[in-house]
Length: 147
Image 1 (tube, rainbow, N blue to C red):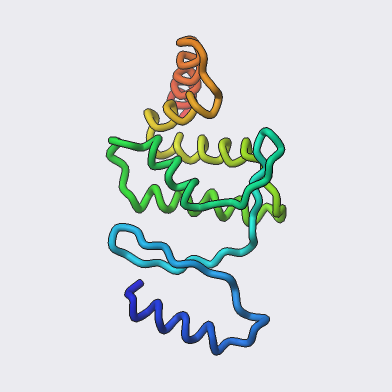
Image 2: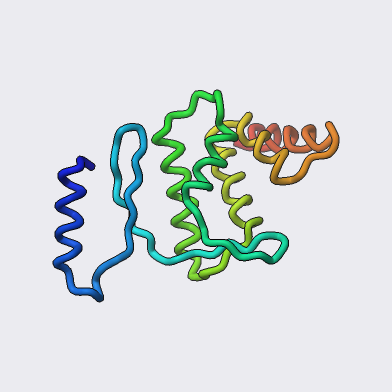
């Protein structure tokens, strides 16, 4: 979306009746600007029980770290993150466990890149031994055999 289009969007939003206004934010990625509507404020419940506001940028950074130095199209990454956010927002819940977010990230990474999937799994599942890696690699092999 061009900067002019963003400005027009914001002007129309200001003119809309208050009840029809949706919260939105602007994201700049790769020189592009995109308006995203946030359907509801989500709260992440950490393992410790602490609650923090959901942060899409943090989710994106986590996925990008797993995909570091992997040849994955940035648009595919953005679509995967957007898909995760939509699943969370459409669940109807305002609070989501951090483990559920991790599960959704694992699912998305599995379809994007096997190496990134294993990297993320090693942190998410708190690998302690080499056999933990073998188990995850076995999961990937089993799915390759099925698919």
